[in-house]
Length: 385
Image (cartoon, rainbow, N blue to C red; front, side, top):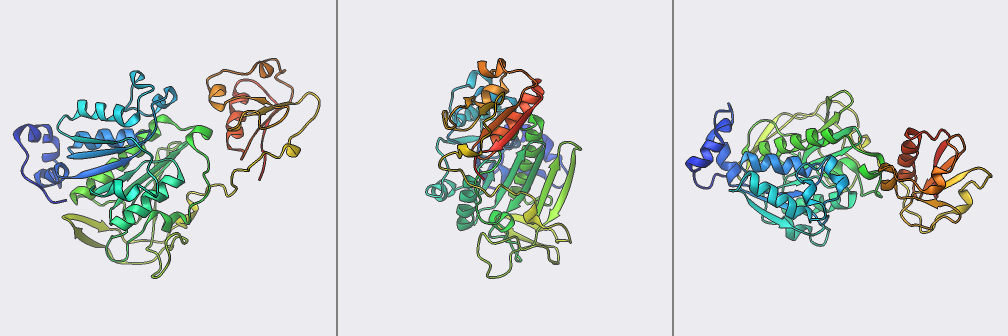
């Protein structure tokens, strides 16, 4: 990003710690001030990303989100407050950022990013930060950014684990690696924080790392994670690096990851941004990092697969109330809040409870919750697949 005009005294005073930083300095700070960054998702990852990019001095920040703030978001989405519950996330986030850095231009996109609108929304920005939590959105972001030639700082967090990388279809020397090159064709939606949970500070660690990568790409400083996938384990607070190789020439988008190959370190300057490319080294197959379930949602539950024995309580935590005849329905969110149906409270803790849902994701989470509450004989099942 080329500097556009100088920084005023107030901006320089605010950015003093950057100006003193070896290898950063005034030129890098001016590049940040001239940068336009759009962040997909104002949730667990988008919150720290937006906070740190605004504080760092990025000139324009776009926020894409069609959701509203819920009480359960506040455990990890630190950009929002209790007073924001019920508000559109882009509006809540924009107000918080303007309070933090009034000189930053904030653009709220109150809509869901799709394949139909992705290119029109992302056009005009210099960098995309993808903190979305569905495969549908990630692939829409990747495809649109590839067509526009925009770098994408991507991250994900689930449970105790996180991943971060930088994808760029226009990267030099054959390093044009995109999200589908690593993870293959778009799969069905898999587990999410709503089904397996997430450690709230892990969102801060991963989101802050994404902000670091964004700053490095925008300013041409440091060594961005281009061609590398960074894997975080909050259980040990350890990071692993998986070196990625460019796809084979002629390989179609969405094919398997190209694996690992040898290449010399190179660097390139595009629009004023110098992006060093790390030399790959032998490592594990990158496609094995994130493996979603392969089964899709059934059109109707297969009730024949559900046990029907005396003394067994059948608990349905699926998406459609009444989908399983004879079952007691409960929302997974209510179980997490300690709100249990009367039938479950009346059921002896040593008698069997079978928890079901469409694909087995929500039922596994419910099984864990019930065991923690004292029910001893709990199993979970998927209705189909």
